[in-house]
Length: 175
Image 1 (cartoon, one colour):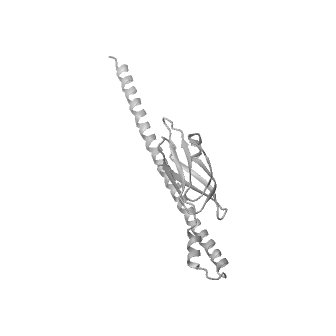
Image 2: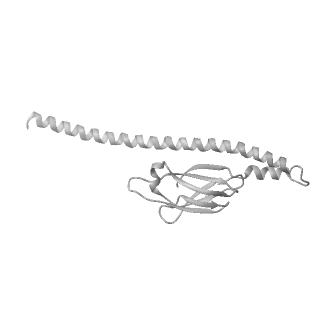
Image 3: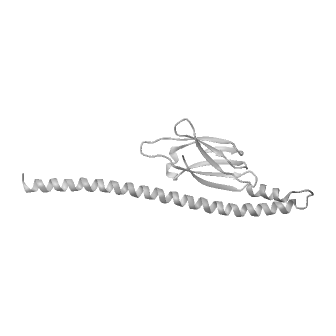
């Protein structure tokens, strides 16, 4: 065996090892990016909930002021009802594979409920983006398309609250 053959074999082995090291680094980078995106989405949802709470308090005070002049009004009950009126979402996995139920677990109706894929580049994986109006306790069904190398992990939900007409949105993780 000539020296050039040995050097060529060593170069080939080094290239193969380098390739697998690069693949492992890419997987770690993708996972880190996914975790960072999840953290950003959670922070944005917390900020939205905080702003939403302030708006609900203001609406509750306005409602209390409007009914304060009525006789026999229980202001505590009126305040609690106004403050606790909100849409909350729950995603339930169905028996069918890649099939989900989005339930309005809140106590206010949601109008013109739309769902979209997060990130938007995964839009082709989502089937059934418009769920219409969902009253408190009602649910709408949507599906995801399975791919060998790609799966949808998060969705964005947008709607109008039935009691205020305010447009809202939330980002949710699929189970």
